[in-house]
Image (cartoon, rainbow, N blue to C red; front, top):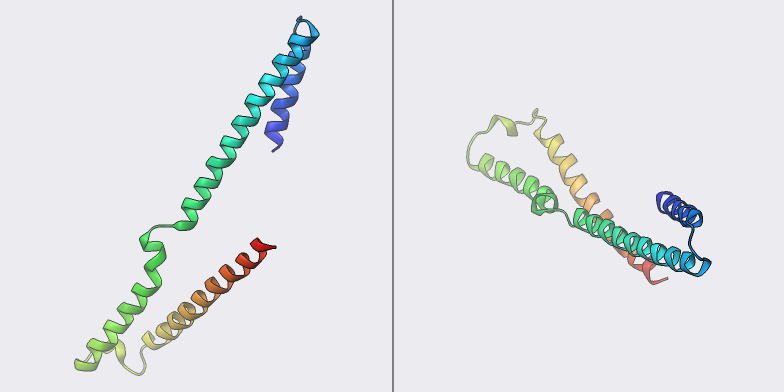
Length: 124
């Protein structure tokens, strides 16, 4: 919070330069510092809210892996009843399917482990 401490120092210096009685100067400085602290708390809350919203994500961010795997499943299902060149033995589709399936399984497992680890750390 370098900017906030810089503002606090500037306010203290400015109040020190005023030609007011010492008691009024202290009251003014205390009031301004209280106002800055409230502003800092509000700024922190706003940042936390933005971070929470970004973490939640939207529907597409949460659903892209299942959608890709469903598309792969539909392609395989259609290829079972028709002749699709994409499903030939020499096709790179099967490599893509392996990568997709591995990424889906490993990605989901990693997400679940990360949630469990952060819950444990949050309790300590």
